[in-house]
Image (cartoon, rainbow, N blue to C red; front, top):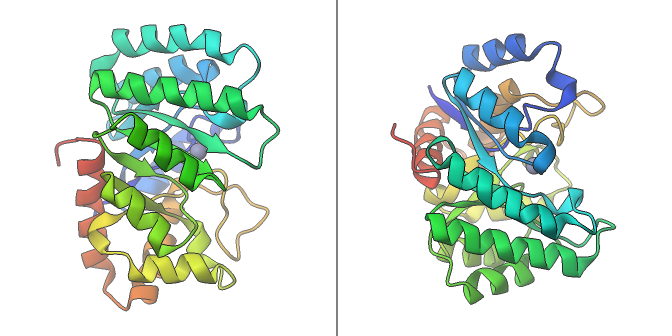
Length: 257
Ligand SMILES: [Zn+2]
């Protein structure tokens, strides 16, 4: 069984002391590939180094809406330079998008997201999308750019209709620990209804602890629990889901199997 954690902040400080043991644990559980999305200029170099050093670690460069500030738009020129310089060593632009729940000026979020959609288009790269209470606006901006290189809508929660609008634009839906919480009824129902061909798995580690593991940092080996929760929810066997989501993830990031 091979699994792909399509969203893991494996570069965060919480892993710095025991990164190697977490990576080994993930491998033992079948998590062979891990995508580490970027949050901004502070971790671009680290991610490029990590993906160069470890087989099965992939990266995306981008600017996360949560970490933007007044001068972020000026950092965009640096992002462009980094992407040009490392185009053969990255799989996507992101994570990027909009977040209505953070205290960051919405206009700045919009400008920086717009610029990243255009950058991904220019380089024919997929996007790793972050969208919290902003699905309609994110969809609208993607359509305005006629964005056609797909990617992943990460950490999905929402309705079937919303998910399918992203699928129609070529995106896979990132399913994570949310589905382990019975109270997340709407998202569980969506994930039950969505075609498996449109789903990828993610931990969003160290965030998004699974039910029963609150208060502890999440880590990529936990992907097997998300897989088994999804298998239960859909009344399917884990092997089949693992195989299909593995193929989907590789396709989303245009990685050979
Ligand atoms: Zn993230």
